[in-house]
Length: 233
Image (cartoon, rainbow, N blue to C red; front, side, top):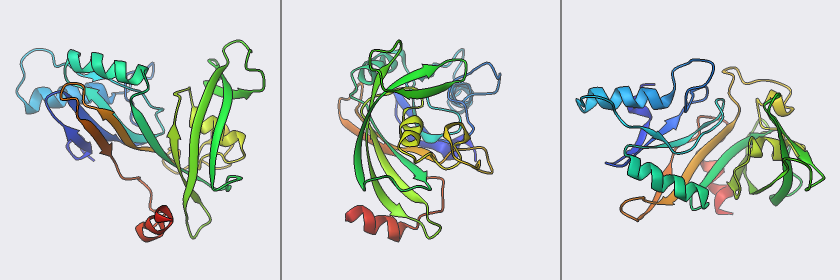
């Protein structure tokens, strides 16, 4: 898929893409090409821009996750988007696939997480006063079940902790499909995990209008008819 096909929203200030599993949002020690650099090169060529092209990273996601990702095309937009993220006026909803069914059809999870930098993994702690412990809060609901017995969860984040959804779902016995790090027994063939940030809502940083950007899941486990029926219920 070309970058042109991945662009799902663009104006003079922002550009949003549907990130594929395996793509980097921002450069890391692997040295692999990242979306931010791809977008710079793309805009420079498409718009015939001389000199450097600005592309600010608004938020980051784990490499094996697919998602809506927003980039700022101006420094003004980046500053204002960073303020929205910091104040939690930047709402993201996710879809996750699990094999185990959560204990309830809908649930509210509050845990304290500790990040282990060496293992690049987060753990739930029973001690909220432990060094590095941070409160993690999310809501989930089961919205579909496939013929193969997998369950589709819609998740709304209220905090943004390291590996939060992966860690909290694993803690209730529902590791995400393909997520070996958090206890799922088998990897997905492409190395992804079945977690997708499908919707982002915020007020536009310049026009101050409500914006909702959505991207379809990259899976074929759940037919639209089954999902629509269960979501209406």
